[in-house]
Length: 367
Image 1 (spheres, rainbow, N blue to C red):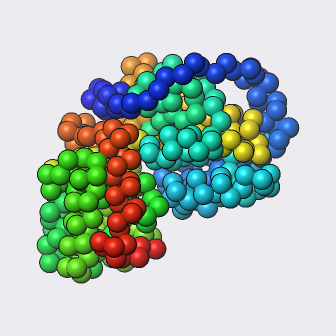
Image 2 (image 1 turned 45 degrees about the horizontal axis):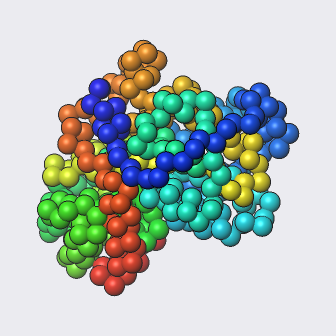
């Protein structure tokens, strides 16, 4: 299990260090103010994503005075940012308080003045490489890109990216999001490009676009956003998604059909998701309380139960706080030994290449 934490801690992000922001409120004061606000508006938190169903339920149980308003659970990271922009002057229920976005979206949203800084009580336990020094955004968990496969429909389970181009997978392969807006799909294109030998960043982004063009031209690509339902129905028998999503879908389907999650042999790409509070949050104290919850022992264990590696994973394992059954349910550490954490510069360069070139190169309208 040690390898997982070492991978997460090794993530490297270049940035300008600035002076920390002082926390003006005590946790008790934040809790009282949050209860007075009475609502928390989240966005893009599907219940089968990284344990969020149970994490939200535990927040509600802890703070019954606070209603959790769940906006657009299936939104992508870009959609979350647009929701903040669209509701700058709106203090109603359509304005999100908190964000859960891919790594590249945290710094870019900060640069646009869309985030407000806040440091949780467990701040020092979050690895330096995955947080803004001033507290505008900070990584909570990560996953590795893999294939979720419906074994009732796929006789030979693909083991690597190149396998997906085989004729036997005609009309079977999909992405778990729109590559023009979804961080998960954007990084899937990066992983595909890296599997061809391209360097991570713009080069791999362009190579990944060419890979998906081949996949689409061959008739193997299905322009439908893959999820548990489409996987089970056979609309998308092979979904390229974060490993924890595939594991969650398989668990929810309970063997009907059986689902296998494969980490590709050539390229195991890791992706960090960061948390942030909107600069225009209608309920800023409820937002702070939510951040405290998800970075607490309880919240971090909720992510682990959802099959994710977390910011505090190594610390919690070392302290004996992670039940053995949770550790046993996770994929073997061996599958992650060569996981690659792209730098922020590589993520940004890939994002620009993919979002800017998908329509022209691949031409498949994923929805």
